[in-house]
Length: 70
Image 1 (spheres, rainbow, N blue to C red):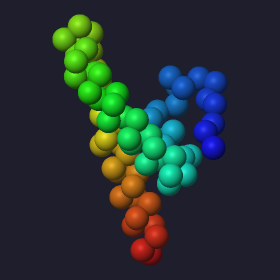
Image 2: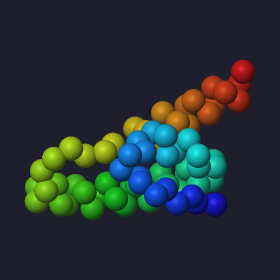
Image 3: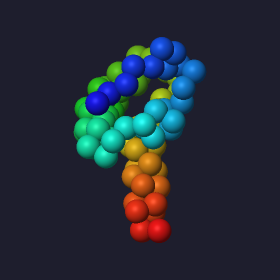
């Protein structure tokens, strides 16, 4: 189940992915792949910082995997 954040700009993506369940996180990863393709096409139009969704998601999956082993 997804959660609504009142001020998502004040809540970093790294913290947002922590509240997602495993299936939701994998769904978000899949959706981020489409977003990345769109951003690659639009990157030349809107300069500025970009979020590396895949890096954030993989880091969270690694943390979860390590916590299951311990």
